[in-house]
Length: 201
Image (spheres, rainbow, N blue to C red):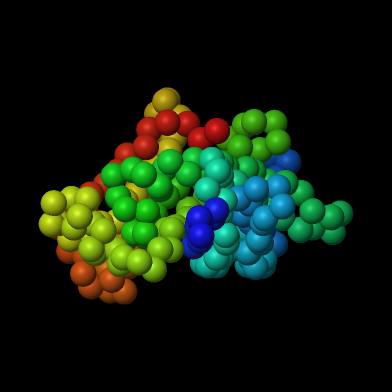
């Protein structure tokens, strides 16, 4: 029977420098992840992180094969209801069919845009496609001529220089090294850094 979808495992890690009405978000930020208009899941609400919330919420979703983008919508709850903080769209091509096997864990950071299209912080996620037929190390060996399993890290940004970029990269490198404890097949000396230097749509 032909498969019409694949299982996406996405962990919404954190966000940075979130603002609402040009003021730092105080609390109660959360993220809605959508793979199509009828398939979405939300993270828990962060009540303490303010404009630098942390969720570390793992969401497992069925993603149709025709899906081109995964949408991340950041919202916050207040006394006057919910507000949209920012949105980012992850091209599926960023983690499927690229340098690293889709089943390998990848860390990605994306620029958020507010409803007016202006920059409004950064969101950090990790994701992979779950395929039980092969494990990460065997797929990486087949794709890379026998190399160990890989972790891809993409940071889509604007063509213009962003001064916070080096700090974001450093934070993700630290997260990658932490993840090595959970995936001992990966050698720190064999981690390729995949740069996606195109703007997030």
